[in-house]
Structure formats: structure tokens, C-alpha cells
Image 1 (cartoon, rainbow, N blue to C red):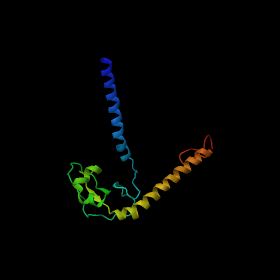
Image 2 (cartoon, rainbow, N blue to C red; image 1 turned 120 degrees about the horizontal axis):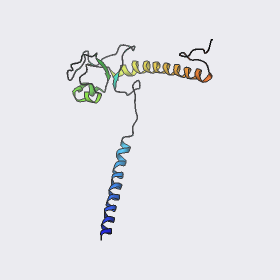
Image 3 (cartoon, rainbow, N blue to C red; image 1 turned 120 degrees about the vertical axis):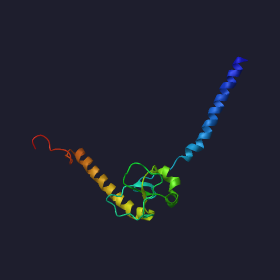
Length: 150
């Protein structure tokens, strides 16, 4: 009788593990998505305005949901229109509830910021590739000297 009850317990464990595995499959497939980063169309979050064309703003004054004791400069955000309108509800998602926030217009982000950002990033990547090629060929890069006594 004791052997039978341990087999039942083992069967229950196997059944429970199988049920968990089956239940987890839809959740795993639901988490698969596309990652969009800053400088790409469809990105929402904080952006750096320095060196870019002046932004077109949704509101002329910054929004603050919860006052912070720290006096930091305002931040610029590209968010969906409903998030800017109901900022109190959405500021936690962007970790910006105590910040002074300017919302940029999405069409400005798409037309002005994205192409400018991609050009700047592309120029940096080209410089990095050139440095890497020089080092592979044995030519010194920008940060390397010419060697002994040359």
C-alpha cells in the first residue's frame, strides 16, 4: 500500500509539472515582441534634445505630477497622446513622476529627431568601423602612436 501511495504522489507531481508547463506556453509566446529603441519611429520615452532642432511641444509649460525636492532641468518625452493627456496615470511607467516634463509632438519626433539621431549614430558607427579596420591592417588609429622612434 505504501508503494502505491508514493506512485500516486509522483504521478500527481508529474501531472502538476506538465500542467504548469502547458500553462506557461501561451504566456511565453505572448511576451515575444519587437524592441524599439530611441531614434527609431514608434519609440516612446525620454529623449535628449541637445544638438537637435528645437522641438514642437504638446504643452507650452512642463507638467509635474509630484513635486520633488531636487531642482533638476526639465526632461523631454515622446509619449502617445493619451499618456500626455493623462500624465498622472502614466508617469510611473516612464519613471518621471517627480520630473518637470515637456512632451514633444510625435510628428516632430518622427520628421526631425529620428533622421537627425540616425545620421549622428550612423556617423559614429562609421568612425568606429574605420578605427577597427585601421587596427586590423596594422595602421594606427586616432588614439594610437606610430611606434618606436617614428
